[in-house]
Length: 189
Image: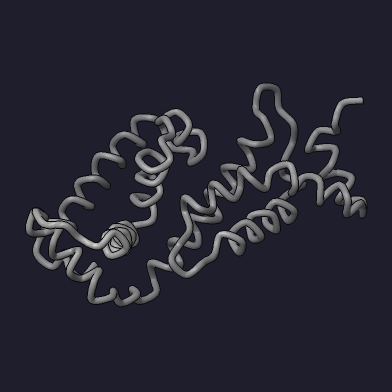
C-alpha cells in the first residue's frame, strides 16, 4: 500500500489525527532543516526556524492543494524560504551584533588584501558578519547560489523570482559584499 500523499495527511491532521501531522513533519524535517540552516538569521536557531516553518505549514494547510506536476516539497520549500526571509527582515531592523576583536582584525585583513595567515574562526565570524550585513534578499540569494550550490532555476522556484532576477540579484549582492569587504568602513558592517 503506497504512503498517503501530503494533502491527505494534512486533511487527516485537520480532522484531529496528530499522527498524520507528525508524519508530514518527519518526512520533510531534513529539507526544512537544510533551508533553515541556509537562511538562519543570527538571532535564531535552526530548530526554532524549523518549528516555525512547520507551525506556519499547519496554519496554512488549507491553502495547499495538490496540483499536477507541483510536488508538496515545492510549496513547503517556498513557505520555509518566506518564513526565513521574514525573520531576516525582522533581524535587519534590530541593531547589529558587535564583532569580536579577532573578527574586526579579519575584516581589516580582507580590506587590505590579506597576505598573511589568519585564524579560521575569526575568518568565519568575519564572513558571517559580512553576509549578515547584507539585505535579506542579498543574503538569501548568495547563500542559495554560492554556499548551497543551487541552480538559478531552483532559486527562482523557491523564491518566486524569475531566473533573470535571481542572476541580477546575485550580481548585485556579490558587488555589495565585495564593497563591504574592501571598502572604507568594512570593519564595521
